Length: 381
Image 1: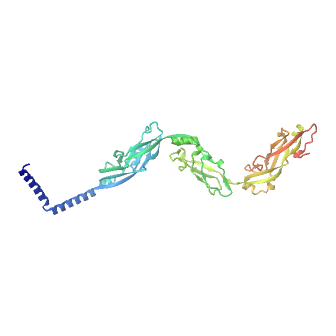
Image 2 (image 1 turned 135 degrees about the vertical axis):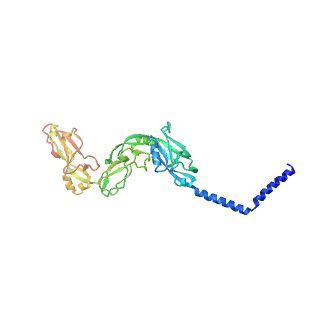
């Protein structure tokens, strides 16, 4: 470059510099005012907002479309054949920025669909789904947005195949808490469940476990604390002890459980109750006579307090008759059970020996050649 050209270039730079410096204070003031004005107008015309959406499950796309118009959320369309075991997030957030009016009134929902082939040949799998802009849609029109950022950028959904089976509910499935009032008790073996044969559904692994061990399916606890009468209550599956995705296919997903609560039984001992011996003629025909036979038995009487408490032991003994029929004897020596006749006592009263077994007598017979003189009522000659 020649000296002349360099002089020209220096002259141009100098003139630009001088132009910039000329009245520099006013120029800086004007620039500051312009930037402030732009920033003010931008804030007046744009708005930033954070939107939080819950992640919810529905069975059909139509249901998702209907709900999204009234309750913004991220809807997972899961066919009835599947169950959502886990979602990586229960909610997501969206940061948006754009036209102030559009952002202020913005209602946005998202829809993610899983088709029937989502699991392939697996019973359970984790399926990641990206949360991109196309997943979401505003309720009304397309807003003018300059920013749309979803956090997290993807959602992991664990799906499992759902199966259904029929099981029989038994008292072992009922959870009882509390204790009846003092003097009362409940009979666990007499618990009634209506209906007792039900269909249940849930993830493959959980349903198969319950099929193998039905007692693992626990119903919601029933409180009988302080009760004196039968307790009837409608209960469903106890979600604290059983997978919450298990379903009971009954009306309202409940069954009716009835737990009998009755006065606690009391016991009374009756000692030396005489045994009555019948049918001496059977011994005559068999040409046998009694050498020895038990004269009395000791009994344990168990029954409702309301029945037994008002009877003295003497009154109770008068209502109980141990009877033995010689016609049932086949051997000359042995132990045999006696029949207990209860006069004026209900069937809820049970009678055993002191060890809780059926009362027995012991006997010994001998043969006679002719005209045997059998001793009646078990007395030895």
